[in-house]
Length: 435
Image (cartoon, rainbow, N blue to C red; front, side):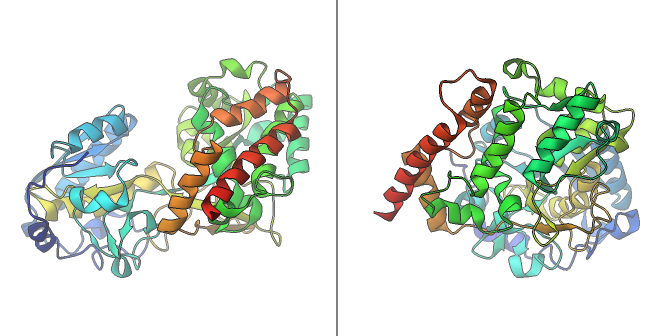
């Protein structure tokens, strides 16, 4: 998929030569006056269109538009919030008609950014203002700003835990299982909800918990070359075992085969589900359905390193400026404005350097936030090889489903037999890389 270049790259580069750096705030300053950045209102005129995937935030985005237009008279901000964003935006990007500011779709690889998005500045400049830029860095030039960041771990209903007599969060896998057992024994809530039919939710156990369990930000790059990655003692084994032990001990819903993600959000909001393995992005969605949103909270993986939980934080969608936009200065200014608002309204970590932590982590003293170490181009190629040869895609929950089936007793294999099988396949992939 390639877009026709409607403007030359040289022209686009010249137009956006005033980078975002130096214009953004140095902290999470959300007051209106501080959002009026270095571009003079007199310089900003016209209309731009902003494309997002959040069909549930139309009212909020309309408020953003009203506030920005008051700060910059003569400007008009229009939002288009698309259903099935990934497919819809991919089609529009093949025509050049993809708004002026947009969420960068995940299926656009870095080497194509310069064909679709205006450069926003250098990494050296922008990193003084924004965190989590690695995903949008192409040879030192930044093409997108994260709209927020999320932590991986578990979302839970604090009232259910309190009713179960749980007075502190688990710090070991054994404490985690004992917590679920107490919930089953002392409440009517489902201790852990698997979301078996939502394969994306199961990938949290295959690719999202290892750094927290190991404490190593480079873990996901190192596991590419570990022929013993699925053996007992590794972070991957421990992660998958957390799921297996919950199912084996009948601490999950009665019939995982009929699980329903949309139902589960309301059920957790109502105290019918205690714990789910999710990113922090889900907290806001569940809180919105709850009469007591303060009960919906986040817990790190039940492992500690020198007394601290290592919490991996990664960027959500990045926001970029269409390189074909006829009003790039206005598009860039609104992008900056949007970033000061959206993370807080979405219950995400702000990418702005020095920003306050979300309420669900505010004041935490036993938590260390880390970013995964970016992989090299060679490591990305090697991971692709390992996954293709082993037939184990870390971003595909199909093979994780079998762990639930084993726990339910509907498979002929034991958990350790399955892990041995997975390890053998992974080792074949690792050997293919070494040849």
